[in-house]
Length: 157
Image 1: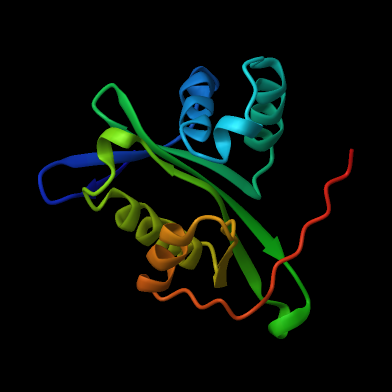
Image 2: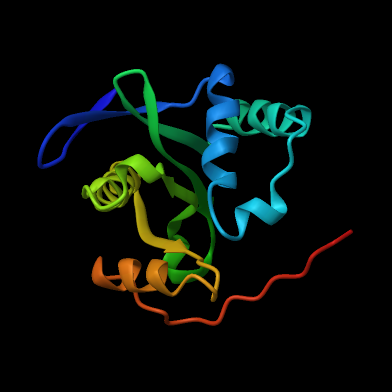
């Protein structure tokens, strides 16, 4: 576990465990967009967790504040040929529990992710945020992220 110092407390980043999946799903669903797209059946989430946890290119991290799950994010390391064979860090599914919003936890989580990526040799950190999340975009811009590319997605049913 890695400590993260906030203004009024210390929380800890840890690799998620299978038993954390229900709490992680609850964090994903506690969101305007997540309410509509997350499900109540945990089996697909548990299968996805097993796949993520088995792959060393992925890390599903959680932030623990005592016994409470205060946040989560997923890191994926993408090797590639562009940018001189750069290793990229993709940050996904960043969520902070409602009880911890406004405490600096999100900033600390992203700072930890960037440093973790640097330690693993990543030279670029990338993420996407839904265009409907204006606050999230301002948050990432405040941390130095630049909207340099237009992301596109295609849902495959």
